[in-house]
Image (cartoon, rainbow, N blue to C red; front, side, top):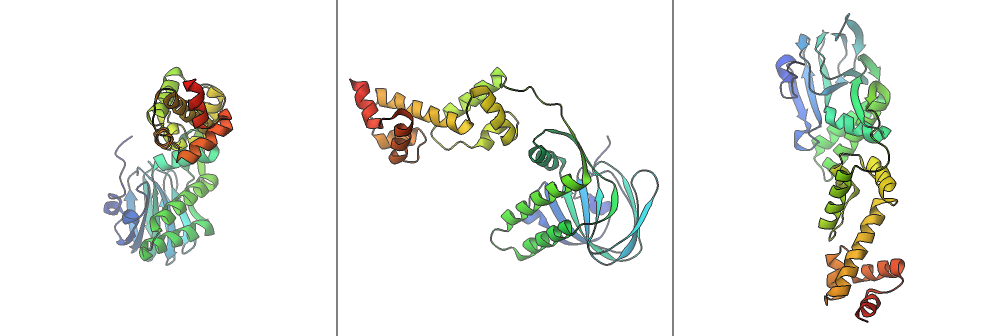
Length: 295
């Protein structure tokens, strides 16, 4: 495959007036730009990103060729055009238009597909659609533009949520996804199990997230949780909590540390949390456990 152009290179081939850019607020892997274009006849090299064009204003006859024959239709506000990544394209239109571009990175689409369908995506291609009438994508485009323009509190959070919503909608409605063959079912490979156990031991004193653990094995959280249960016979949260209790027991047997210090060393929020978990799991308090160990 030859050179794939980036978001920044596209205006060299599709020159227009840049009206808005999400780079200051949004995700780098879901970039939004608003352009105003005069009538043009252009060729665009293959892009590294998926491209979604949502028309905001103006109407025009649009001609486009990706592979094979030219396609022709009328476009205007409420219309969306899709272009998969890594495909060269010709575009020709005869009136002024204003458009929103979504540039979606393949890594984001693959991650979203894996989480949405609970299977690892091998390849993703968008359908070659010159015109679709999709009020969902129009609404998302308008909301994103408003968030970028207003710059209010929580804007980045809202933008990222809208980007996820758009990605899932596009995958469900306009994409062909091929999935990887299922990885070996059941238990982790021994090397992965050691990495997971070592990571938990080294970080036992703080809150360990499922996303962190899943990242060790390059799994989605859902896949990791299922595989973890098959390997250890319990949920990751239960395993981590058990290890915190076991570490606390080690301190109680050999140290004279205060109970509140042991609680913090072992990742409990406070001494009361430590007491509750001990009573639930061992049917004794930490003080009673320590006393029994001292004989």
